[in-house]
Length: 415
Image (cartoon, rainbow, N blue to C red; front, side, top):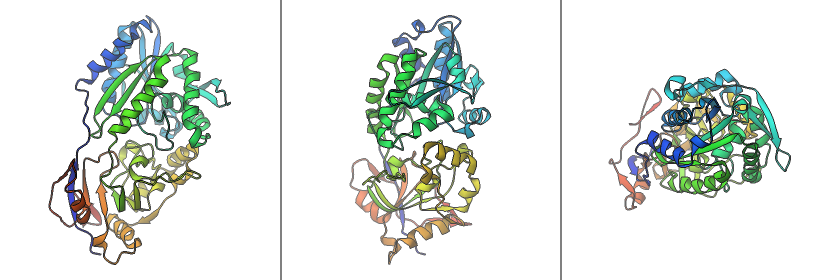
């Protein structure tokens, strides 16, 4: 098959950056008076999830330092729903893979499978909390705030979700995910309010990243202002969200997917696919064929989101831990996202099959792109015809002349 020629381009995104992350964390916690909210001898749980968050170890260490400065005893608690296979050992392994260890954060890192039911929402949703966190005298909820991959609303993925799903462990995640997607933002707030009324949460720390995976914003919030603050920070996260340079593509090749990239392996807000029963697909972006080539090591075999693609490789499927993948998708109720697409022997066969399925007389006329993953969209490769359309667009830089893509031993070769 004669593939289209490809051109490497660079996109420029808004680049707000926190220059000194530990200093900013300390300043924010001082601003809200954390030292007046925890006291000597108290044990304080600091949440850590399964997502790859820039500077997360430094952020958690700075929080632990501030808790310790108040005379309290900090510890980091694994708060990631059913991830890590739902086991304490699996969740500690996930944290270690993200650089979150006792040495890096300067305090104990604990995980447990046990939960405590702490109440119910007005609508009857049971609310659970990690037993270790609940036994503590206080909790500092730390999480990145970003668009969610299942639902959209005033609150999505952030501090409230860290409580409802992260601290809720497998039982809390399962209870929440039985909610219809359209109702999830409301239920998140209601579950969060159960936590906040209990008085255990002493502070929240919201993190927003820019399109370069850099820490763009850190803001500490007091419990009584958490919901409003998260709504505001979500708007900023949407503004900074990296996107593909075109809203309509014939094909997209994603070189790697993974849980450290997105909860769905590939960010649905980038690829424009939901693959959820009863949930309409976004109108834009529209991508006719998606090929995903590999799974990150940081995913530990969890290939949730593979069902968002149309074609994949035997290499990726061999790396799947089906038990972890299926537990994740069954817990969330999004079973379509675990369904394995057409599997081809290698990268070349997968890309060829995708292009051939489009039925074009000349594949060189197709418009497509090749990206590393849905998180790193600054530099990518686009077909020559798409590059011509983008050349005059502000914020797009053409980096190379048109060139052929190469496969060595069936593996895609690109810098």
